[in-house]
Length: 68
Image 1 (cartoon, one colour):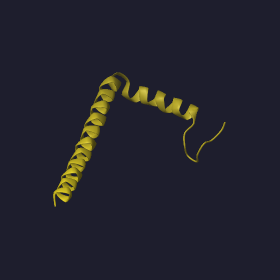
Image 2 (tube, rainbow, N blue to C red):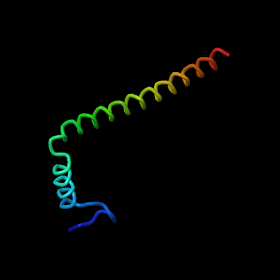
Image 3 (cartoon, rainbow, N blue to C red):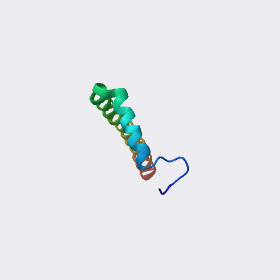
Image 4 (cartoon, rainbow, N blue to C red):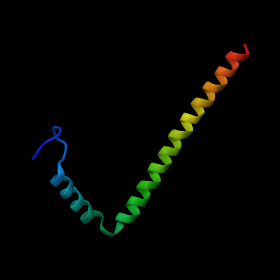
């Protein structure tokens, strides 16, 4: 077995983790994944809002410098 990095799980380890996750979450897994997806989307939306605000501030600053 080839280890890519110290402590990084390989193929069999991921399989064990997947089986344990299925045993623990079982029937709740679809709702857990749905909530995870919503959380990721909210995070991306927040990041985009911050980036848009920074870009708008930069454009306003450049416009002020150009008019001065």
